[in-house]
Amino acid sequence: MAAGDRIFMAKEETSQEILANTEKILAGAAEKPKRYGMRINLADSNPATRVTYLYDAVGMTPAKMNFSVGMFDYGDWGDIWFVRDNRPVMLNNDGSVDYELNHENHALKLTGGASDITSVAYAGNAMSEIPLIWVKRYAVKNYHYVIFCETQFDETYHAYAHTDADGNILPVTYFPMYEGSVTNNRMRSLSGQTVSASLTDAQETTAAQQNGDRWDKLSFSECNLMYEMCTLISKSTNSQASFGAGCSNANDFLKTGTMNGLGQFYGYSSATNGVKLFYCENFFGNYWKRIRGLINDKGIVKVKFVPPYDSTGAGYINTGVTPSGTSGGYINKMEMTDGGRIPAVASGSETTYECDGFWFNNAQVDVALFGGDRGHGTRCGLSFWLLNNRATNVSASLGASLSCKPPVAA
Image (tube, rainbow, N blue to C red):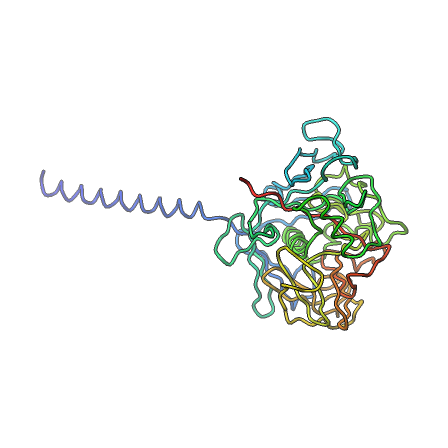
């Protein structure tokens, strides 16, 4: 082979190596998981402009309820995994899925035939399956950052809402399709029921756990994840304007199941009807929900991101945040923790910042109430927190809802 031929072959081999390396780089880039992030500007009081999209969310059209035509507009979010793979199911008491419900009519099974959503004899509950979301949360100066990823992008991403008491990260977790009703000392998530109120924290917890060792009441991490999912897809911190007023100014409480034929999301501008988020009916409004994992310990907010929980603060993280402002006012400032945003200051209004209310009492130990009830109007929403209620308090407007962590796969 001539010298010129040898040089040509060497050049061709080098080109092939470069091409191969380029393909590897491109393949690696293609395999890199997408991230959908948002930045909340604490200095911007306008709920419609204070959220900025980051990473792969940049340029996406937000989702919102179109009240004039009575339809939910998914924007560009309908095919993103935590929206697309969310589904309504009947969950057995052991935490396994019995069957999937029809997405538009929960009275039916997905495969046809009547479902068990109204049956108190059924050995399980109607639940919303939430796929695994890894979340990174942090604060820099006047900005709060929340970034979602389908896989753990790096060690700064956590999945607290999908973590069980043994520290296992679960591929799905379950939120309640309906507010909690207690039958035969067991809290249920079923349609056509009257929500059970006037129970203490201990009574609610006992009733929830009667379903099995994977069951409990909703927690701070779960409520916060719902807040983050909805704030991200709507690009707004005004949940009532984006999703519906909820039952927040009504003469009567709603029974469960009033929104069975209204799909994954639905809401009304009227404050006498329910609101539906990720198949969860009345996640805010109608009844207060007493939750686990967030307390006000005599003026210090404490949190616990994963079970097990109690109502005294054992094992909780001291955030150092002391609630301030006007108790019974509108929240205008939240503080970021590794597990989510917590209420801090009430000096806002119904149209600014979070657009939701905040009550607190820094002289006693109180467990958190979430979302508001039928009598709190514009204060209701996904940022409405009450931290002035002892674990032993009872009220006709105070209830609870179920959650479930599925069993670990063998």
